[in-house]
Image (cartoon, rainbow, N blue to C red; front, side, top):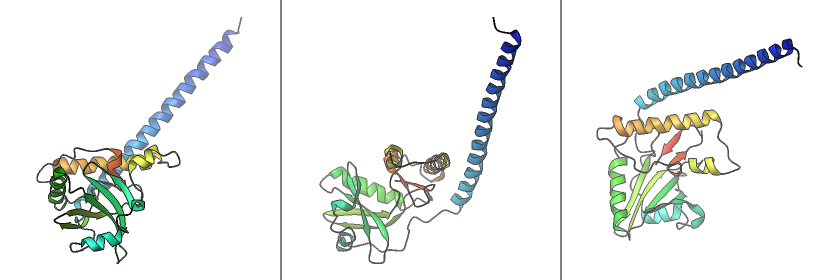
Length: 214
């Protein structure tokens, strides 16, 4: 039979271990809350200094210029595709990196999608929403020229084995997404519903903590 003193000591060790674990979790939670509050204050301050929707004052780009920039819409420059469009990486002669969102003009819904996006994006002012550089349009071609995000999509960083986001980066991304959604729902004159919020539509810039929502 074990010594009662041994049992008592063991019990105290378990209690102390449990307390240390709870204190550790509580401290971590408190640090996360403080970080989120400070980050939200910084975000609100930045949002009050709202960015303009255009990255540069480019005039409407020609089809030829866009074709040259994307190397003939080469598949090697394909960044992604959706139901109505395909997105290509490109570079203009002045060195501006871009993402060309080319709409499938054979689909009637693509025309509506393009017109809707143009109408909405040209009036939005938020640092976490993809900025429009310019557009390209003729009878059988429609494209939006968007700001290029060098670190790709959140989807890539979440589900690719050799890529990793640390805790602070994840928190920053969540806060930025929440800030952008709050602006779309309550900060714009007419509430905007995104309708397709998912990791593949969250774009990451060079800093990794400044996401852009497409």
